[in-house]
Structures are given as structure tokens and as C-alpha cells.
Image 1 (cartoon, rainbow, N blue to C red):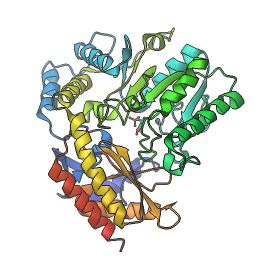
Image 2 (spheres, rainbow, N blue to C red):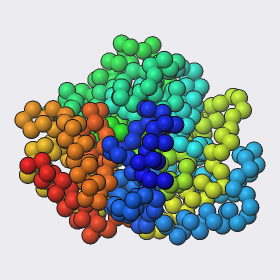
Image 3 (cartoon, protein in one colour):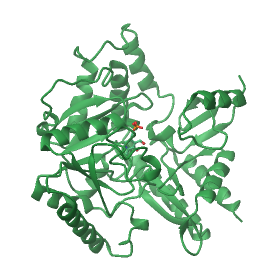
Image 4 (cartoon, helix red, strand yellow):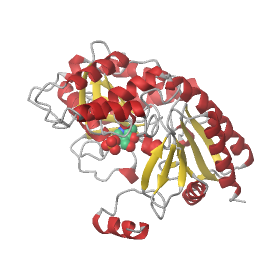
Length: 429
Ligand code: PLP
């Protein structure tokens, strides 16, 4: 089958709204280390790790071996009505890493399901369907999670029964408070939180959900400490704090294992997915026992926490920790950020370089007025691809290049990517 036929068949049978990269989307057929190859034999350095899914990289022997060992038993999965040794081991490890006292873990198959579960637990616990979320957020495509997604382009329904109010602060580059010093910025956001609770709710709010660094929203974040300041207000009302770590977990931000730790606060729950299985589908919630045990009816996930995905996930966590990939993310992230800042010095189209560790963004603007420039962003993404580099795209206005390579990234690969990015920017002249 030719690539053109594949693309035509995709369009005939898949929904129109499926978000794909590039005018001519590619098929990835092979991977090794940080590199992937498409169906036409073109090789790329993958600076988006799939979609932050391949946290460690491609063709990792330890992960393949763990999955093969499970498969050799003849049982890929039965169901979660039986005990699953690997699942229990993985839950223990995640609970220990979470920093939440006596934490409990519930496994799902995706980030959406993880956030739907966390919403269910929090709204049951508090007997309220009033939820707070951040503007510019993305939490999934379920009936509840589209409601808490503060990004019209990614929120397919406004008909969800979740009652939601959105808060200021997570997208600093375009915040009305952007020019304030950190402490004043935090104060302005806390004042907004108080006002939203006082004026738009009856005070009986279930939870606030935040992404420590917003993923789809363009790797934007508030000053460190904002969510600790929020927590003080939340505690006055008994409102729970949920950190969506689907993109920020597992050491990717370099300085901490979980993104929320940058704020010096322990949330009531964290949700996770994407990188945990290094390509195998797994998500989940880690939470305080009081929150996790809030359901009074039976529940389960047929496939959540199955032996294959939990084997892959346990091997991924062991690999991450054994090789201290958090430290590597910090080191390579600093190198990449320096490179991006160098490009920004030359090209006024690069309006903002931001992020942490190996979660870095370049916001593309019209020089002069800093208006979002989605067309130039798409061109730059395509130019990078033509030169063998895959980068992500996102942001509220589709004008942010996102870089989140596998955390095993090397120094020469980082240098290579910076050169390709510079060459891509040079095509704007
Ligand atoms: N939460 C965040 C922060 C995400 O970035 C995503 C996906 O991009 C999700 C939740 C939803 O995860 P999934 O696509 O696995 O359902």
C-alpha cells in the first residue's frame, strides 16, 4: 500500500476531528533510541517522544523483556476481578513515589479516564459537582473532562453536567498580570480565586484541578508557588487539589519527579498516563485513602492495570530511576533552553521560550505586537520535519512549538536538534 493510499483510507474511515500533524501525516514504522523511521524510509529525531508517550525512547530491551516475560505465561490479560501481581507492585511503587501519605492507586488505560475517575472521586467525596479548573487547560475528551478543559479548540462539548469555573494564572505569557513580579502575580491570582469562589459558587466546591505545566496549552505555567498559595485558600473551604501529571510526571521537568512539587505542595490526588508505559497504554490516579475510598458503589476498569501495561510501566519506572533520567532531563533541558534562547535573540518571531527540563516551548509571534502566529508555527514545524526533526505543536492559538524528547536524550542529539531548529527559522528570512 502506498503512503497516499494509506492516507486516503484513513480519511475515509476516521473522524474528521482527529488531530493529526502535518498536511501529509506520516506513518511511524520503526524506532530505536530517540529516532524513528516513517513508512517511506525517512529517519527523524523524535523531539516529541510520540506525544510524550515514549518517555525513555524506542526499542528499550528492559521494557520489551518485561512484556515478553508476561506474554510467555500465555495470559495477556484476564480481567481485574483477579489479583494481578505486577499491578500491585506497580501501585506500591507509585504510592511510594507520590509523597501522598498512605496513598492508594487506581489504574486506567488513558489520561482521560484517569481524570474522569479523579473527578468522580472528588465530586462524590464532597457531594458537589462544582469544580474549579485553570483557563487554557486540557484534561481529556470524556464527558466530564471536556467540561474542565479551558481551551475552546479542544473542548468538544459544553453540555457536561460538571459545573465549572475557570481561574486565571497558568498561561503567564498572555495573562493580564504578566508584567507583575512573581509575588504580585501570585497575589493577583489568589485574589481571583477568592473572588471566583465568593461570586460564582455557593462555596461547596469539590476540587481544583491543575496541570503544573499545561501540555496542550503550550507548556505554559505560572510562577512556582502559585498552587501552594491556592491550597491555603482551598483548605479554608475543604476544596480538594488534583494535579494532572499526565505530561509533567516521571521526572520530565528535571527539577522534580512530579510537576506539582515545584509549588511545594502535596495534592490530594495526582493523575498520570502518557509516559508511564513507554508506549503501552496505562493511566491512573494516586490519591489519599480518604479520596480514593469515596465511592460507595462497586466499580472497576476491565483493562486498567492489566499485566502487560503494568509490566511495561514497572520496567519503565525502574529504568527511569536506575538511570537517573530526571537529572538527564535537567541537563539536556538546560542545553536545549540555551539553544532556543540563542535563536530567540536572532529571531523576533520567537516570542517566548519557556518550560522546564525536557518540556520546553517556543511561542511564535508576529514581530512587533506579539500576536500569535499559527501559520508561521506550522511552517516551522514542517521545515523541522523536512530536516529530520519532529516537534510538537500546540497552545491556545496553535502558535507554540513544543519539545519533549525521550528523557534519554544525548548531548550530540540536542546539538543536532538546535541546529535543525535554527535552519528552520532561517527559512523565515
Ligand atoms: N491530561 C493532560 C494534561 C493531557 O495532556 C492529556 C492528553 O494530551 C490528557 C489528560 C488526556 O489523556 P489521553 O489522551 O490519554 O486520554
